[in-house]
Length: 467
Image (cartoon, rainbow, N blue to C red; front, side, top):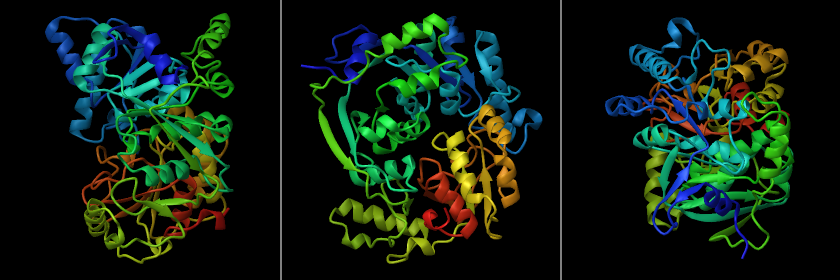
C-alpha cells in the first residue's frame, strides 16, 4: 500500500512514538510573533533554558504594528508598544533574528516566511498562529501551536503531536475567466462547511493545482483552517523549487540541488489510501462573497441573501438567522445591492504581489467611490518595494486607495485599523466572525479583484464587468 504525502512527512520527522497516541516530531522551522510568544520566553527564563536551535527560528512583529507609519516603532498604542518592545528584548536576549518595525523586510509572518525561503518541503514548520497552514503550499506540514507548545519547541526543537486523518481534495475542471484561488477556496468551504475538514490534513491535487502559482497555493492552504482542517498541503514540484531558488534562507548552490532531489520524494503515491476523498468541480465557480459570520456562508455574486427558514439543518437555520441579524441583512436582497463602507486589500491570505497586481488592474484609471474608505496593505517590505517598482502604489493612490506599510492591519481588530460599529467591509482576509475587524463591524470575504471592484462601485459588483 502506498503512502500519502502526509504519511511521508510524519514518518520522516518522527523522533519517537508509534502513532497510536502521540508521536514526538522533529520541527524543521519555527516562527514567532509578538502576540503568542511572550509567555513562552518567560517560561524559558523561569526554567533557565536556552533556545536549542536559534538558527532555525526567527521572530516577526506584525499583528499589533500600525500600518499608517513607523513612528514610535510603529506602535498602535501603549499595549502595542509594550508587546513590540517585549518582542525586541526577547529576541535580543535569546539571540534570535527579528524582523521588527525598523527592518526593511518586516511583514506578516505567513508572507515573510515563504518569501525568505524558510519552509522546508517535506519538513515540519510551526508558529503560534493558526494560519501557519499557509506554508503547506510548499509540501511542508505547517500548523499553528499554542504558547506552551511554542516554549517546548524553543527548548527542544521537537513537539508532541497526535496524527490526524488525511483527506484528498481533487479539483477537476478549470476556473473561468476572472475566478481566483480565493473564490475557489470560499466555494469549497461553502460546500464542505467549516467543520468539513475537522480532524484532517487536506491535500490539494489536480491539474489546476499543478499549474497554480505558489501564491495561489498559499491562499488555498491558508484557508484550510477555515474548513476546520489541521493543515493544508500541496506536493512540492517544479513550481515550488523555482520559487525557493535564490531565496535568502533557502539552501544555496549544490546544497539546493541536493535538497531538490530529497524534496522530490515527498508526494502521495498513486495507490496511497486517504481516509477521505472529495472531488470538486471548479469550472462553474463564480466570484464569491460571504454574507454571514463564518466563511462557509458564501454565495456567488449573482445570488440573493438566503432565507434561513429554507435550510434543512436546524443548527444552520439558527446560525443563519443570527448571522443575518448581526450583518443587518434581509433574505432576498441581491448581493449586488449591498453597499460597503470600507475595503481592505491585505492579510496573510491576499497581500502578495500577485494579489496587488490583480487588484491594481481593476483600480487603474478608476476612482474609489466617495463614500468608501479603501486600504491596500502589502504583506511585507519586499512586496511593498516590488509593487512600488511596478508603479502599483501610484495606481492605487491615484484611484483614491490608501497605500500602507506592511502588517496584519484590518484583518483583526488588534491595532489601529478597525471597523466602527455598523461599518461594512469588503475584505480579502480569511475570517468574517462577529467583531473580527472591530466590535460591531460587518465583514464580507472576497478576492482582491472583487474588493477593488467594491471600492470603485461602492457596493458588491461582479468584477468581470469591470475587467
